[in-house]
Length: 209
Image 1 (spheres, one colour):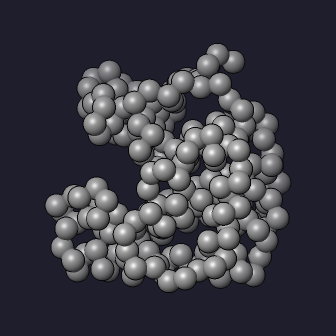
Image 2 (cartoon, rainbow, N blue to C red):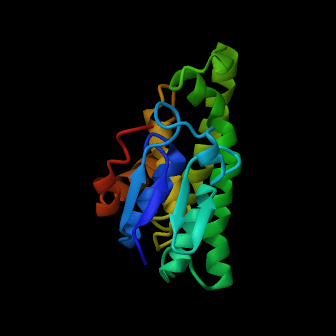
């Protein structure tokens, strides 16, 4: 397989999902900065790759692919990483449940607080929007706290999976966004475990929210 091409700026959490997955598997890749502050994703060149004008996009020997969670699933399957994305229907469902949760419940919860406080988006600047989002965000983190408190060291139990890449980056964002947070000891311990992984440290993925 030739070197994988990853289009998207590292400041995007969705791009970092893909980069961490590549590091975890040991895939040779080249990352190109596209998106806010870099090359425009609204050009005909980029829109021909992803008509939504969003990052990340990958170019592999198989073709062009977009949607970060789908890309992560593809890479794990392409490289036969059953540990990251189990072939067993039940074990795979347990991992994908958390991947879907991250993409829906968790993303929806943080949007107002993160966009207002970190991205400084005027559309989310109202204190009421930020406060409501922070409350919802903390609520989703408490769901994760309860799971980690009663289960294994990772979200599906004893084994690290793709779900932990997505959730781990989300926990990093929660910890680095300037909101009031409850003390969630299981979540904090979980993140400390993830930071010990060489694949996480190589990317410096806790350097950005």
